Image (cartoon, rainbow, N blue to C red; front, side):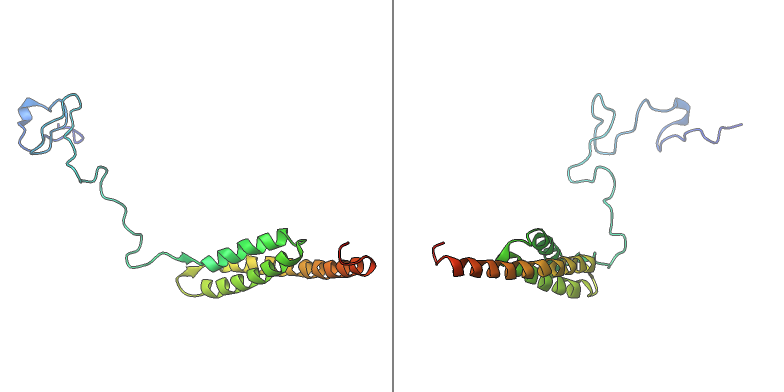
Length: 152
């Protein structure tokens, strides 16, 4: 009875001689001494073929840079709500960039609507205390200016 799991002889090998001591070198390439493997020709893939795209003809989705910028500026505006003039400009910029990012993220092939919404919320939440601090800044400045002069 023959063993079904027995290794079959290589092509061109006499089955009566048994198996070779190591792998058979590729045709045209001598075996590397000490390693028993044939060298890989220059430019040939070493580990098989590279991975292909999962679905041919489908482009990957692009993230909206406007949404990312709007979210970052919105977070910065939310942190620096106490700076009188900077925060008003930053909040308005965050609202505008986030709105444009939401519109761009809603188009086919684009992502980033969630970041646009986060930037819009941060921009609106930063604008409310920014306006309050700006009003408080002008009221304080006018109260100081009325009591002491221009150089106080």
